[in-house]
Image (tube, rainbow, N blue to C red; front, side):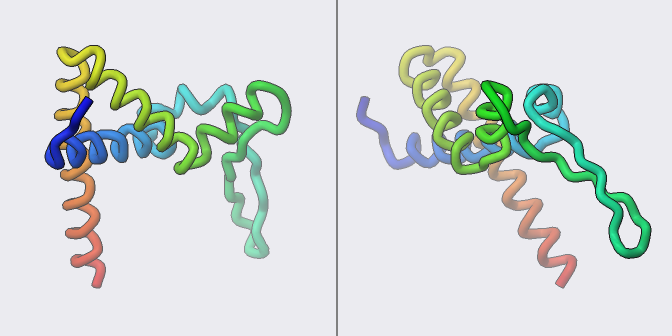
Amino acid sequence: MDLTFFEFLLLSFASFRLTRLIVYDQITEFIRRPFMLEVDEEDEHGKIETYIIPKNKGITGFFGKLLSCYWCTGIWSAVIIYLMYAYFPTIGVLLVVILSISALAAIIEGIIQKMIIQ
């Protein structure tokens, strides 16, 4: 399938947003939870900090590492986005447009937040 530059850009934005959605967003925590452990550690001031780390063994450990790795999840997100776009265009185009708009909005928000903090 030949892609125009604009299509490539939209697919890239969509892949970026899907990756962040899976790896970081609270709304998808239920997907990550079976593959992660919460570890509480006390700092030198007595404050408890909770860290989320991948489970160590077996298939849950494999998926935990995958879901905590932005680069790994990014590859699979790109595959999913492209295959949906190429082979299921009705759903794929809708998904790509929504995720791309969301990605661009997130990028703009990040820039604005950075400008406000400085």
